[in-house]
Length: 203
Image (tube, rainbow, N blue to C red; front, side, top):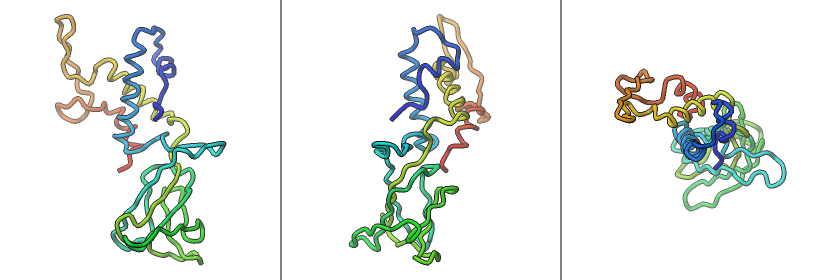
C-alpha cells in the first residue's frame, strides 16, 4: 500500500534539506498514511488504477448484506472509477448470478451507489440476506488530493515534533503543549487537520 506522500515531497513542503531525520520521517509517513486511511475509513489511493496494461490489479471486492427491501446499495470506497462485476444470490444455498450493467443494475458515479433495475429500467429490489451482493470495483484517487495532502503534511509534522504529547521533558526542561483541539483537556487531532480529514471520512 503506497504512502499518501513521498519523503521528498514532504521535505520540499516543509523546507527541509538535511537528511539526518529521513529514516524517522519515512517511518512516520507510513504510519500517518495508515492512520489517515483508518480514520477516514477510505483507501484514498489504494484501489485506484488507470486503464492501461495490468491496471485493475488492485480491485476492491465488497460483500454486501441486504436486510430489508431496497433497490440501492452504497459502496464504501469513493469516488467510483470503474465497476467490474456485480453478482447476486437469492439465498445462502444459491449460487451467485452475474448481473449486467445498464440491464440489471445502474451505477450512479455521483453518489457511489448501485441501483438494481429490471431490463426496462424500472426499480427492482436487491435479493435479501447475508452476503447477497458482491461488487468488484476500483475507486479513489490516482494521487492524494491537494487539500488532503496538506492535512497529511501537517499531521506528519505533528508527530515528528511530538506535538501529540501533552507534556515533554527535554534536557531537564518541561514543555507543555497547548491543546490544539476544541475537545476539552484532550490533545487530539488539531482542529485544522481534523476538518480536512472529515471531508474524506466515510461515516
